[in-house]
Image 1 (cartoon, one colour):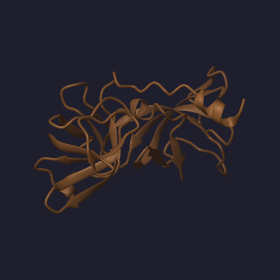
Image 2 (cartoon, one colour; image 1 turned 90 degrees about the vertical axis):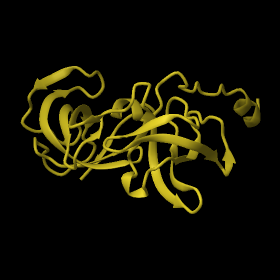
Image 3 (cartoon, one colour; image 1 turned 120 degrees about the horizontal axis):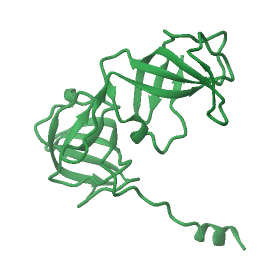
Image 4 (tube, one colour; image 1 turned 135 degrees about the vertical axis):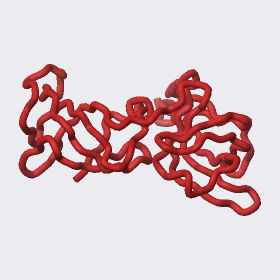
Length: 204
């Protein structure tokens, strides 16, 4: 069997078309004669012209006028498509990289002041305790966060609880933390939006 045969035999991934729309914004442009055009990759669901979308965590709700990919108009965009879409009566200043577009009529994305996450400390000098402030990267979001509370230390392979309420963790440890954003609210759909990732990246 050749390499080409092996590639031909790969089953295409199942696209999460049946899930609610989630589209993290990569950038936002002001295009003359068209207007405001957010761009990003559809992670789940379907984006169509005429759909009323909202932008979490703190953006507006508006109508999608058109959707394009590689300068071609689309009747719908599906997971995996990198698209630009023109929105109605919205300024570029109202939208930011890291916002998440969703269907306002079908399980819209919501803001959250905090969330719970499993963290693996890969390499960090010294100890990490409550109050530690890393930067969280999830898709296009880049957010200053704070470990409000270390809930449990767990076995990184089995997930079994090793210690409740640890005072600190160090390199090689895994733990469950209550995390809060230091800059207003974050999109409360991190597990949904980041479902294609195996982790959330936190850096100092």
